[in-house]
Image (cartoon, rainbow, N blue to C red; front, side, top):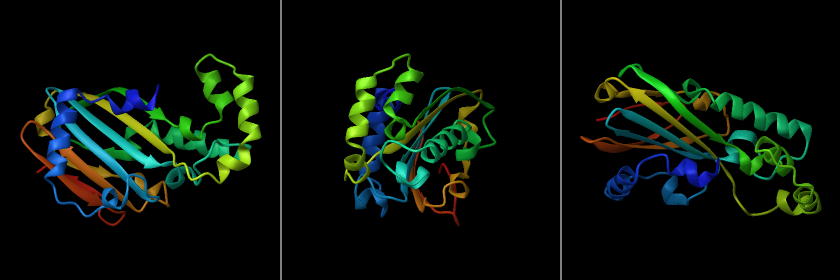
Length: 205
């Protein structure tokens, strides 16, 4: 699934509301330093009706240690390990209230996944792309182009309004991660908080 699809898991109404909300919130965080800063990630929480959405965007370097397409077996193992870990939402964050069940998740590591591996997973085998990748391996490794890993979770909750407390656990798995700028919006409240390994929880208040 493309990054565009993952970024659009929230409804248009929620995205619009979130944009308005975040412009009014005074946050001294990674977003002010630029859209892509190593060690700084973004976590968005949104609630609508009976659904809870979590979206996590993090520089690839902060997760696997590089931003180019994996070329060695060791690099590929790191990508696959990160993908497996992030497929479990409890590794990112947990919340006890609301009686929620995970109904959908998307983990996009395509930015650091070799083209042939990425294509095989989607039923394609483009040898030309693989050859092109090999020819530009050195260029890609030293390119200034940034890449991100994108994660999306969708929950169905019996009492979504009761969800208030979140504990974020991802710091313990990715040592390069320094801060997570968290922002949230519900039908009643909106807010933001910068999280660190020493302060990795927040309340929707």
